[in-house]
Image 1 (cartoon, protein in one colour):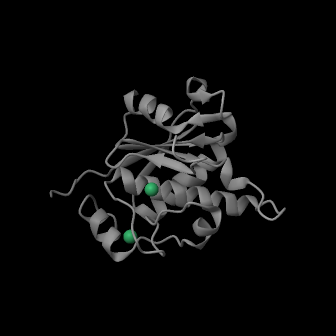
Image 2 (tube, rainbow, N blue to C red; image 1 turned 30 degrees about the vertical axis):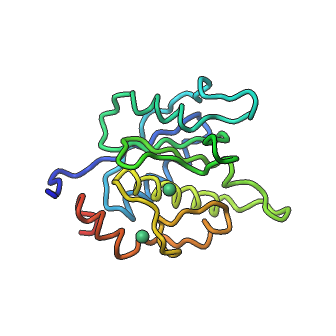
Amino acid sequence: MLKLSKPLIVGVAPVGKDSVFAARVIAAHISGYMNLKTEIIPTLNIPSFAYNEKRFQYNAGVILKSYEAMEFEYDKVIAVLNVDIFMPIFTHVFGEAKQGGKCGLVSVFRLKMEQDCIYPAPSLVYERAAKVALHELGHLFNLLHCEDHRCLMHFSGDLCQLDKTPFYFCRYCTAFLQGFYHFKS
Ligand SMILES: [Zn+2]
Ligand SMILES: [Zn+2]
């Protein structure tokens, strides 16, 4: 596989005004951990077309489909939401992206929920959001889920697992990304 020579640019799109700060934190983590250029895209509207009135949640598949159809001038796009998103087979998801797709979603909604009557500090919420973003970006670069519990591509079904996952791609996933672009300089 030929490595792309021009630097890849990831657009980070806040969805709704209250996602702007999370988008900035996520963009900083993407450039720091994945050696990619990032740009903050002007804020998108909350996708009311994807709202499911029976579940009081937004359908992540519907949102992704509409974002994939928008012609963003970026190699990849991560949209950052502050609403509850779901996929039909799950009660909720932290993020969503199709393998090899152009756009991925991250929602901070469930990342800031209380556990054992304690609300997480904002720094922990942003750390979680950044992990979800790196994971979804991995999917956009064609990575599948990884069996290594210490790898960002390991599937995290709950906050406990997400908090245990370090900011680290295993050797296999690193080599895979390296085949796509200059993941590590
Ligand atoms: Zn995944
Ligand atoms: Zn891995």
